Every structure is written in C-alpha cells, then in structure tokens.
Image (cartoon, rainbow, N blue to C red; front, side, top):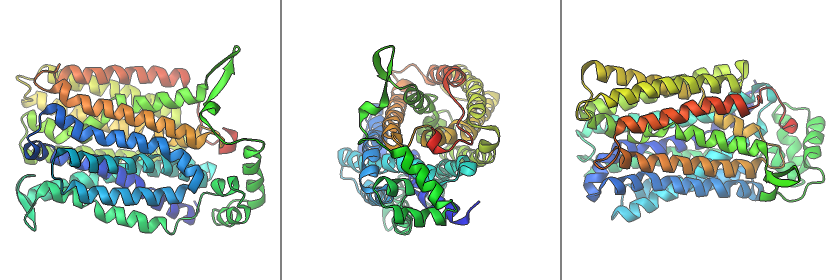
Length: 455
C-alpha cells in the first residue's frame, strides 16, 4: 500500500475521530447535566439529540460545499466548529445555549462524516479502498473510546461528574474541553492534505490533479482520462439527478434508495443508545457510577477491536456478506438484551440476568463494529457515480443523522417513567435488525474491487 495514501487517509480520518469523540463525550456528562440544568427526561433527550439535527444540517450542505470549495477546505471549516463547540459546551449559562454549542459541534460532525468518506474513496486505489475507507470508521470508534476513557479517568480522579476537577471547574466541563486538542490538530493536519484529484479535474485543474495522482501512485494520463470521461457532457449536479425514468415515470433511482436504506437502518438498530446513554442506562440498572463508566468503556474497547477485524475482512470477503452476518448477529443479541430487561425486577439487573445482559450488549457492539459500522460508510463512499457522489452522500448522511436523532431523542422518553420500558424498546431495535438482513439480501449489490468510474 502506498505510504503517502495511508498517511493522508489517517489525517483525513481525524474528522472521524472528532465525530466519535464529540458525539460520545456527553455519555459521561448526562446525569451531571440533568442535575445542573434541573432537566426532565424530555429536556435531557433534546440536549443530547439536538446536536444530531446539527449533524443532519452539516451532512446536507457538505456535498454541495465540497463540490464548490473542495474537500480539504470543508475539513478546515469542520475543525473550527469542533473547537468552538468544545469551548462553549463547557461554559453554558443555561440549557438553551448548551444546546446551541452542541448543535454547532453537530454541524461539524455532519460535515466531517460526509467529507471523509468522499475524500478517502477518491484518493484510494481500488484494491485497498475498502480497507482505507474503513479507517474512517476506525477513527470514529477510537474517538468514542478516547471520549469514554477520558470521561472515566476524569470521574475516577474527581469522584463524580459533578465534582470539582480542574481549576475549580466541574468534571463534566473538563470532559468537553478535552476535545479542543484533537480539534486543533485536525485543522493543522488539513493544511497539509492534497485536494482530491477528482475535485481538481472537475474544476479543470489538470496539472494540479496530475501532481496528486502521481503521488498516489496512479498512471497519471490513464487515470486523468478516465476521470475526465466520467464527467463528460454532464451539467451541474442537482437533486433531479437522483431520479430515473421507469415505466414512463420519474422515480428515485434504485441505487439512491439503497443508500438511504443502509444509512437509516444503521441507526435504527439502536447502536448509539449504547454510546450516548450507556453509562446512565447501566447506572439505572443497578450498577455503581464507577462500574457504569467502566462498562461503557469496555463496550467501546470491543467496538474498537472489532473494527480492526472489519478492516482486515472487508476487501477479502466483501461488503454484502459482512452486512448479512452483522444483521443476524445483532438480531440475536438485541433480542437477548431485550428479554433480559423484560425479566429485570423493577428495572434492576441482578445476578445471572445482569451478566447475560452485559454479554449480549457487548456481543451486539462486536457484531455492529465488525460489519454495519464501517461497511455503511465504505459503501456510501463508493456506490455512487462520480456525477452524483457528493450530493447523494449528503442526502444519505442527512437521513442517517435524522434516524440517529429519532433514536437518541426517543430513548430516554421510551424508557422513562411514562414510557414503554427498556425491554420493549430493545425489541423495537431487534425488529429493525431483523429487517436489515432482508434488506441486504434483497437489495444490496457488491461493490468490492470495482473502480469508482464503474459505479
């Protein structure tokens, strides 16, 4: 593998790290924030999930922005948003401005979540595109792990998320400020990244594109001609390009519907409940605060380890088989988790029931991390043609973040005092996991080994 390609992939994936960190750091601060703001379950759900609406906005605008100003400049904009959000989230005057800072960070997450798959897919060779594309998800899970690890260490040092930790500031504030370090590093790293050759060629900058392609180890003349041909006779991309004519009627293209489907289903299986509310969930189920933080950290570690497995397998056995395996595994483990909470006395997990729930939860994370976690982002980066890639991924990203919002906002409501309970909520996620298996078998086409210009 070209070392230059690997290095720029790693730097581009810093956006994924911040995506994971920013979206999960609130896990350890949930209870402290609820106390600090005097918030109820609905307000807490909004404080956590409205960030995701910002992500949806960021995802929606990122495609057009990337086509207008380039992939690298979008990364710089996202890094500035991450930095500002990290500072402001630790200094809120009330719940309203806290949400505003989180939404700003969410916009950064949305931009980073779309730009990295586009950029990596456009600079990676076909033979290793799956592995390099998976680096984005690997960075996301590292970000999640580091967020939960830093939360755990901060709480271990201070005693609780509400206790004074640093310069007379509460621990939960420091949790948010840790993000400033990688956010600044992301900005500095983006200053040295080359622009995508496909973007440069689309703007007629053939000389600059040639220089980048030569560093990527590609045959410059052949690759330039191939990319130029994929843009030939094409007008400015618009939403109408996502439609096709079938039986005399204008309908959404099949490939775009499939992209929407995998984007939404990746969230409707409920994975981010583990990473947004895991600490609060385990604490409410009878675990002490230390054990609840540690349990969330262990789940994140498994997420990290199994993503490495996905990177090793994705270009060997393909995208579709991994998705099927993941769907079946998640259906079984989520179903087990739901039954454990159904059987819990007064919502408390005790003895063998608690152990089984922990095993099921961590196996669920393992199946997701080895399959749907990275594969969805890889496929979105490569399944669309050069013509519609940026705009199609943007809309799919919007759908993914909206699905994330629905799940994240609804969880504390569904499991609260007036909700249906944790057990039934997990059975809803089980149903979506089962449906995802059918969806993959019926509609997904393998993209392994195909050039982007073939899509």
